[in-house]
Length: 86
Image (cartoon, rainbow, N blue to C red; front, side, top):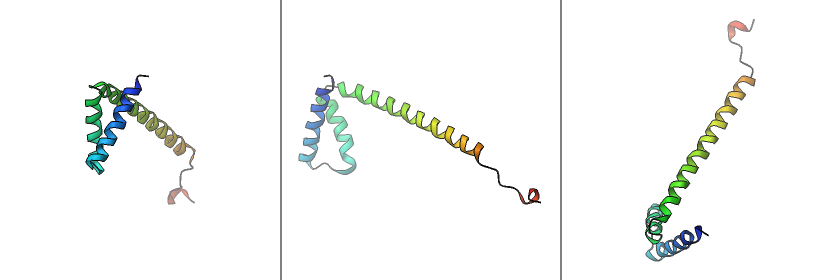
């Protein structure tokens, strides 16, 4: 499979990070760079595709949430103002 070399690189990079004591917010940049090196740049295309997909999913969620909020506002009865209460 196309993913196998990237997965192998991820496992190797995780092992290297552990061996080097890389922790916290240093892990992600290390992994991204090391996996890019180990895959000779092939992982970069995967990462770009992942970012684009995440953006599309986020946009779809935002649109759905906006539609739900709009629908909720239309169904909710409006509170009467003091001048309308009598």
